[in-house]
Image 1 (cartoon, rainbow, N blue to C red):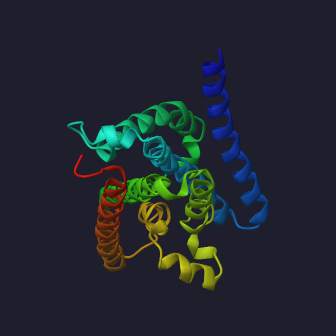
Image 2: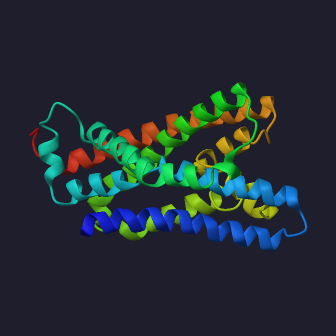
Length: 242
C-alpha cells in the first residue's frame, strides 16, 4: 500500500505542479494569447524532458563509495559507472510510465503543434546529449562522496541550479541579460533550453550546429573529468595493487 500510494501521489504531484505553472503564466501574460500558448507548451514539454534526467546515479555511486562497496565493484566484469547508468535507464522508463504518460494524456491539447521531421530529429539528438551530460555530472558528484561523505546537499543545489539556469523553469530568452550570459557559459542549457529551442523552432540552423559542437566539447570535458575522479577514488581504495 505504501508503494502504491507513493506512485499515486507522485503522479498527482507531477500533473498538479504543471497546472500551477500554467495558471501562473496565464496571469502574467493575460493580455498576450500567443505568449500564453508558448509558455504552456514550454512548461509541459520541459517537465516531460525532466523525466529523462533521473538523478539517482549520484546516490547509487555515492553510497557504494562511502560504504566501501566500491572496492568490491572493481572485481566485477562491469564497472560501477556502466552498472549505475543501466539501472538509471530503468528508472527513466519507470518514471516515464508513471509520470510522463499521465502528463501527455492530460495535456495532450497543449502539446499539439506542428513540428517538422528535421526539428524532431535534432531535438532527439539534443536530448541524448543532454541525458549523457546529466549522467556524467551526477556520476562525478557520486564519486566525490569519497571526500564529501554526504552528497545530498550538493545534489539538491545541483538539481535547482540545473532546472533554473538550464531553462527548465523559465526560458533563458526572457531571463535578465547578466543571468543569460552566465547560463551560456555552463553546460546546463543543453539539458532543457537547447532541445526546447529546437522543438519550438526558435533557433537558426547555423547557430544550432554551433551549439551541437560546443555540446560535444562539453561531453569530452565531462568524460575526461569522470575518468580523473574515478582513478583518484580508485587510488584511495586500492592498497598495494589490490
